[in-house]
Length: 540
Image (tube, rainbow, N blue to C red; front, side, top):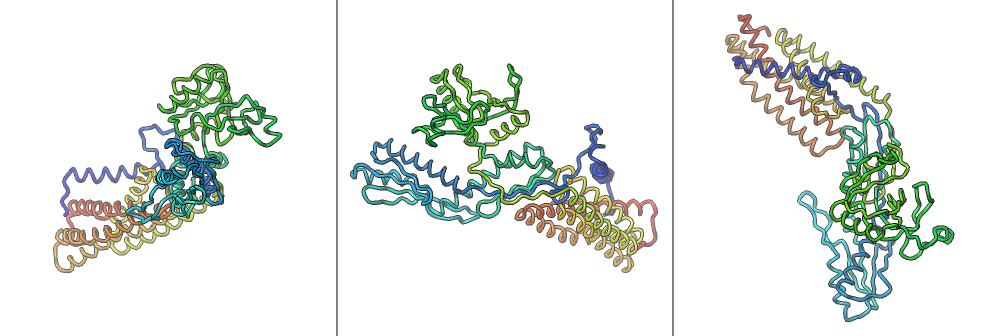
């Protein structure tokens, strides 16, 4: 156990020196590191929300809007299904949002059974997963009524699954939007039935974050109705059939009358980037459709040359240009008196996709930098107290061998900080607790080894035999103890979230580095000491 090949010695020293070099930038301010050449390690540990401040936002999804959109889709599906099968109905397809109901009355009773069979296909079966036995049943409950009426009602189970899917989709959309800020490891997770918790550390422009996350981002391209008067619709409060009165933010008109049917929607958008108009040098957003969207957009612009169409974002017109010529390439640009930041934010919204429903802020908290500074100071004091106590105890208990253990402990801390810096992991207050715990655990392996060496020396073995036996026989116990702790840390990381994960990460890294420094590095120090001094007795 005391023999080290030359390549092993070089490898151990390189790992130790490399860890200290990577951890070194954390001792300097961020401004100082900006002048450091790129090839020199300059990454620092990312501090979490509780250490450097930031935004804590709790959002709630608008369930009514989600149900309203779903009922509209069901109504369209019912209408298209019956028309395609040439089943007549009268009075139109009606929607009752409070009852979560869509109803239709079949004209000919002879087609009643056929209509029931066709509409039953719209009810999607629900099924659980291997990890979670979710609600069973169908998304819709199809029932008969008097006078040829058929009702399609959204079930509680279907609504539960719909909200869950919408929350998961919203989390991914919010994550893509926040990533545009350049922040590291934001916490975005579901809470309860219809809520999303967003925590972003180190962000300075919280108002911009709220504006970007809270926007639904629903993009539509619609034709402007030039046959009716906007003023008359505003006075009467009613738009002509087949049109909608939509407010405008383009600076030219307060509102527009738009055709209800969208030419193309944001679902067909594959890219959006900020840029500048080559003629006016104004900030614009360039966009590109997929193949299906490009085909529909090109067909619509071909038959509507010379007519205005509106670009609608979240039910507000942001631009209403006139189609000068057919747009066949599937690309275009959006202009609307934007600033550079507005163009950037709009491109982020369009690229990230629309939210299934609006998110409303229920709780907003801003963690100040002063709280973070206090937390860091308290964490440093705790770490220093623990470190000093361990160092003194080991040094008094084991003398020279305790000095070797303390040197390995210093390298261990440097390796933990270096790995966290390389991984760009987020350090939270529980993470600091994990490091403090690792300091205490780091010398545990050395205690086992040194006590075993004492027993072997008291049994009359030579110095080399006692040391070799101490390291070889203690290895199994060290591995058993650390593997079980590592498994517990992995379970915490898998099932936990936020601060719990931060604690699990630092603990896991600390376990790995502790085994390396406490067993391998101290063994190398002892081997080199034995080779150079050739002692006659063990100094423990």
